[in-house]
Length: 345
Image (cartoon, rainbow, N blue to C red; front, side, top):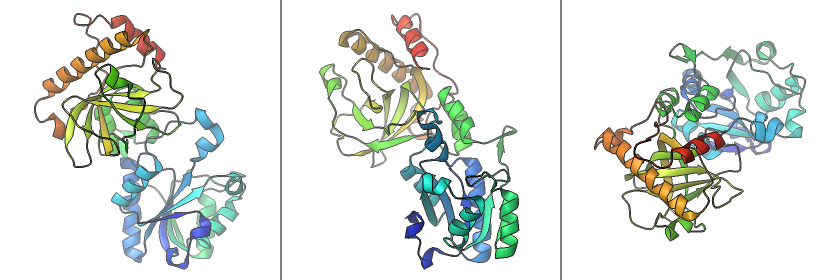
């Protein structure tokens, strides 16, 4: 896998390819179908498959914090693209210079002079260029003159509905991790390296592994029953908080994970976290004693959830299709849960 950052880093060795263009956020089953379509032409023409992506994504450039949250970081996106057959990823910085190109300039500079594309696969509604006049028809016309093929992507549906990153985000936000996994072709996960933080969890008997998140809109926010996987593949039931830790006060999002059946030092290790069920939203507590009591309640709910799923749940991952219902009989925190959900947006 070759990752090429910017047109200026393209060399003669990168030229001559089958290409596709897009955000590929999440690399879901719809994206995987596009990559399969490209691989067929790559094998036919005996040239590599190149995926062109943008960083930041165009909607992030224009909308900033109002852009949809990402499903995957660039690092994870590249890994998934590689796993599904991409041999080259051209990452173009989406900036004023790129967005000022006309549709024809984009074709000439990126596809022809840059990549020497032999065949292109894009959506028939694909638009590009500062004047928005770059479209599928222009690509076909130029392709006929310049000698490269152009075809539109095949629609991929699940439950008679097109698979999209927007649909996956909606399912995750609603706590439906089961159907989200069907659309992604894998369970949704978060990744990161454990760093040293304020270590406040230890002061209340709940040590956490802290994974910093990018300062971008969050796909998930709240408290979840999760499965945590270490770099060696060992899995543990856990409880995780995704957000800004309102009781402590933080201006940067963090993923905090408390492993329920683990004792040891995780600093510096890479961790993969699989959200399985949403327990509640984030809420600001008056003091650490109230926070500690709520955390103990969260842990008990997570333990019961995993126990009900059976002994093999660490391997098969018990993915819920909705947030866990409130337990009015066993909890004194129904009002806190209500406030948390109201505060969660």
